[in-house]
Image (tube, rainbow, N blue to C red; front, side, top):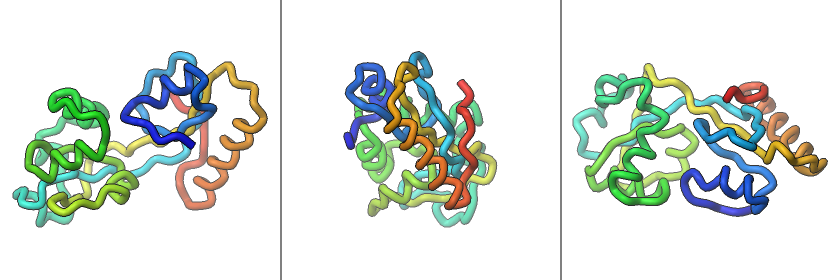
Length: 165
């Protein structure tokens, strides 16, 4: 197992440093095969003192985020502020520097004082995929992909199907 930074997954797969990766779409599919493991709701990540934190649900328009900006929002903020991972983005949110939308599973892994997560009613779901190099012929990787699909299905997540590119 290798923990890596934001958007490093595909590089590690292409260079052979990783055999498989769990990652969220979108990603550069060049040389990568993937199966969808789960579709999950996203939440707004807001500074605790933000005017929308008392709401039980918000809309993308309330956040000033267009639907087509959702997938690139966190990455845009990372580039703008010169940070390299989600923990740093969440720290910026706690400081009141930015807001974004994150998959609900990511929000669960990053509880922070000063950050509140609120459901976003009209946000498209996040797509979690298991990916591997398209040249891979490893039986172990194939077994891992099947196991990931089975776990997702057993937990009521989406049925694994080939990811669209």
